[in-house]
Image 1 (spheres, rainbow, N blue to C red):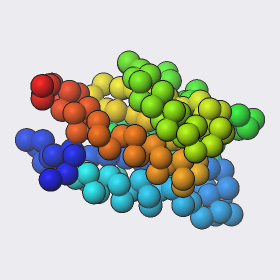
Image 2 (image 1 turned 180 degrees about the horizontal axis):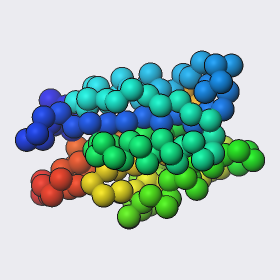
Image 3 (image 1 turned 120 degrees about the horizontal axis):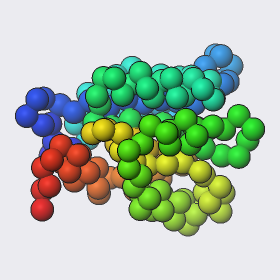
Length: 167
């Protein structure tokens, strides 16, 4: 059984936004999108095509476009650090109705056990309507660590957002 069972209306939908100016320009091949897509599929989600966009305002536009499709989950990768063009957290925060700080605390704690650089991640996790949004780092290892943090909670999180408390 997958952690996020399909709801009464069929499989849950999920979207992925990759914030990378170089990948969007074709200079660099995105390595995190396929990892996230595989994880989502393993957890029973139907996925929209991955959106690879330049850092900055394009991330906000991609998130807003995805939210019109009412997915259960949106995962971003990249743009969470301190580089001048890292603005994924700033593009995400205005869209959130409620933050879920414990998820990001868990993500940073798990990452910091492997590299102190994880403490520099400024990502957010929260809810926009009935959609869970999380900002993961831009590195494959950081993404895998973040998804491992989500593994035990994603099913319950989805149930709660759908109004099924599953207690």
